[in-house]
Image (cartoon, rainbow, N blue to C red; front, side, top):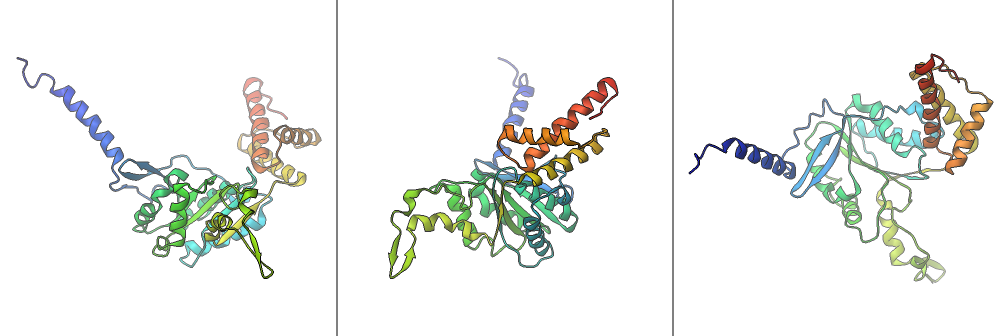
Length: 304
């Protein structure tokens, strides 16, 4: 018979691995030091969830966001009210892709982090935990923006119902240090079909919308602030492309000149992608400046 201690080391290692995996599933306390971490992501588990710090954050600044001055001013004002402890609204940023919705939220974090603002990213599937997340953050001496990116639902989606319930119920009325900034390509967050209107009716000259329409717009109505983002006009797109072209050139110490040839290349880049947006402009600038930086490293030129 083998001595009982012969495989003790292996069993201990297996027990440690099993314990680590079990701890990953337990809600417990996060132990997150918000003084060191400005942003975190909620990670759901079978038995709960945990806040995981985000290491690499977008360094975008408000001054980098061009062509959305009105939207920027409104969300800045709302955020300033929030970080200073005054009433503020949950916000829905909706519209064309690549127009700066998510970047605006991250730029606000960079601006107001020293005032105690923190960011928590929540995936759509994790919105069923929103009440738990808010309760967890309520104990912290910071102000939190709960951000849900590219939000869209089917009408019978459990996450849709969880967020709607939280926004219209007592979850946020009992917590003064959390607001939701959601981004979406859809104004009403759920698909809209012509058939939704078939049961609309006129009663004594008044239009009464179908119940399905009322249900679909009810979630977006829970956001006190709606900000609309539209595709850029050509001059706006070129302004953003030039901004990033010159900004990245300075960051990479590359000699770059914005001339007519570069302007035409930027337009062709957008035409090939079928959209004029801030994201498209940024990608164009990265390609051009990256190519110039590589050329400089190879032959010492780096000229555009």
